[in-house]
Length: 323
Image 1 (tube, rainbow, N blue to C red):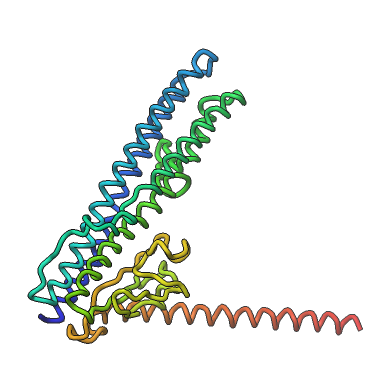
Image 2: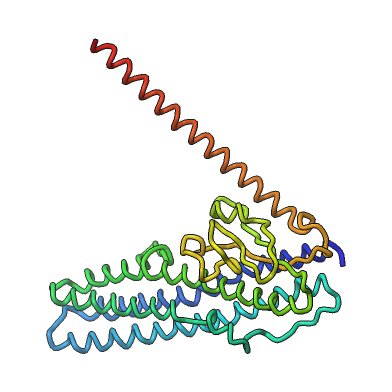
């Protein structure tokens, strides 16, 4: 088995993480659809009349409940696909290195999977969304706000702008939270599946290790750039930013080390070749980014010192002039 095949397998594994963005579209599309339904319900209902308030709230509850269900269903389907991608990516990579490797079970039958295949976080967001929207409706009725004013407030809650010539999804409010949760949780499930596969394969390959791979651009956390290339025995934790992690986006990590993380971990055995031979191009990119940031920090520190010296010198001159 050559290094070229291994590199190709690593690239396929890393490329799989790009698929999660497309899967979040289902949830953002549901939020956009909810926005349209609420807009129709509120802006086309006319003024609030006492006899219509109960009917309005009932319709509101039906609409938000239906769209919340759509969001949860989309999350469940995407989560299962993420787990299967993690298992498949691991099998492909090990299969490229070990000719006798045959894929095992999917891991879905394991008790461990239950702690990762959960929709609890996205469910909590949909409940928050429904409560916030209902609260805004009731508040608008009590304050005699117009339907347009209420809809504007709901738009801020959802984080979706739907005006002629301008559309914004996934940057603020519930939509941003849903997007961040989906991307983080799906990648967590994918990493957990791969880690489960490694743990199972270690029974066959006692020397199996895993290597932390960061993304070499200016969005990557400094702690994750430092962690790049860290190699540990499967079953032992990585140390990232002073925290222990079984794999990238491990639920035990703090939010600052976990949310929107784009790192990955790949299996490795010494007999497959030198680590740098397998991830060399990526490591070079990471090293360039690390040096760029260190140089940037050095310049900022130098400028800060110069600024302090300048102010100190100016104050000395002022004091001297007063004597």
